[in-house]
Image (tube, rainbow, N blue to C red; front, side):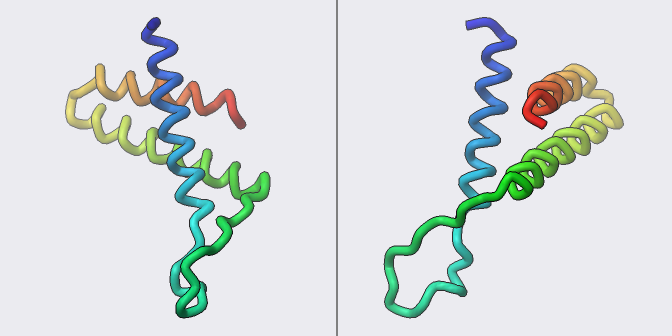
Length: 88
């Protein structure tokens, strides 16, 4: 597998998990005794917000790594950020 594909796979897995978390229903809104509840339906704006949050998190982590002299790791995070940029 090419490194570029591996990076894309990591990004998509992470984004899928973040979207799954965003679909989760707040447990405090579920009536007592109810064990099954439908997941939230995300709007386009919700999805965009999740992607933007992921991008911001990658930017912040890359900046922190740069500040600590860990440029190789920071570059890897910036590469992941560029993959996410294709989805907005």
